Image (cartoon, rainbow, N blue to C red; front, top):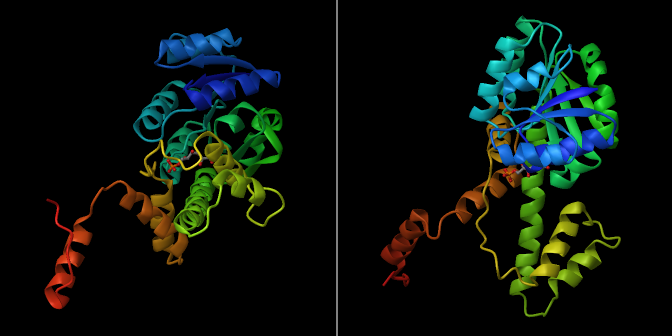
Length: 300
Ligand SMILES: O=C(O)[C@H](O)[C@@H](O)[C@H](O)[C@H](O)COP(=O)(O)O
């Protein structure tokens, strides 16, 4: 199949190579010309604009987006919905908010365009080989056309058509909520070890836990790899950025009145990590001092 891939950053470029390895042709476009050059070097056909990309695709056209969630994806989907024809396909492979996907699908489907929201997991290595894909969209019947692509680029059992548009990105959102909780628990465990009176070797512990223990996992393997390069992670700060999916999971859980204490605290810890000091801390410290005369740490 010939696929138009828009967005050739780390994920898009790896996905392009994965698609080509699996016998598909890729026409690639990115606003960054260097990225286009790079995938052309791997054998993809280079497009100079979105229009150029579309002109190089046979009908029905399959246009796959690997763009940052939010404006870049939304504006590209809006343009594609205008210019594509009934029977064409849009696949949003980014981390879009699921309600945006529901709205995008509605507009596309009103013109007869098939819309699929595809949560993509497995990081950069998953995009390159044996990825994991959670796909909602227009219909199971329309999905049959895209199936051969997923058969090749996903690992065995690594893709699922989950039903109506929005359900793919909804599932990816919850997946990432779980990811927040798991990573926070791993981080906290190593923090306790770090503060203990014993002298643990973090890399050796991660390797041990990866060798048959209950908490063996890809995340633990990544921890092992990180500790192998920097035994106590002295070179990196503990600020934990977030792109929104943990927040969306919590918001959805609140809407549905589902208790998610672990995910919500993991998210709060990410926010806390972004501040050196907190106003909460100052207020609590002042109050302790007020009622109990407890010491406060002065800034100067
Ligand atoms: O499953 C995955 O491969 C990851 O979840 C991937 O999609 C990405 O690394 C996260 O979106 C980061 O999310 P945060 O920036 O919110 O941690």
